[in-house]
Length: 250
Image 1 (tube, rainbow, N blue to C red):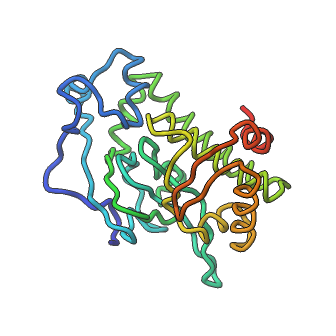
Image 2 (cartoon, rainbow, N blue to C red):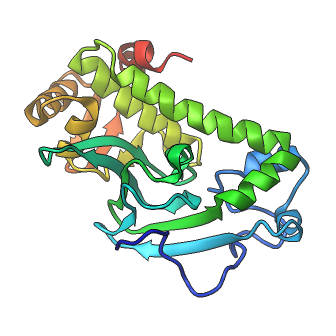
């Protein structure tokens, strides 16, 4: 799927899950809006319309590098990968986004998306017009602060991965970080699916694919986790947390 805008469904509608007043459980902005005393009806009154997008299938692009920046999107279900391709044709994975997380914020500077975003499985999105959410943010300091926090989080993740960390530390940080992100949205913190390929994980962590496999195998032998195909059970959180702590420190 390509083009210069997010794929759209017919019409623009407010999210229809939850009820007329309450946000869906994975809404990326619900806490910021509720902190300002706002509900879904208030957003409608302010013409802040949320547009449902999807389902996108694995391999469908949400946007491509160079597309005009018009909107940000919150992942409602599924997993989205962001990546770039260098002049030699090599792919560089930038991140993975899960339900409740926002993609597209890095398009603010330059008014173009600087990377590609692709669905890794069946994905549903909530699309927010950035001009409209910018107007809303001027009225809601809590929402503006939340947008800044999201930007800071992405920058922080990229900076930490650039450090001189061991393969064990990188893998532990990836798993614990994923666990925390899923737990924040009500999913199990200790048992989850790795929806991305091992090669994508290796690319993201700046490791060789065989190193990722070797580390996971050693973690399993040491009783830190159990891996069954793409399903992971974290068994020894204390040791995994200790390995991840230098990268995930607050």
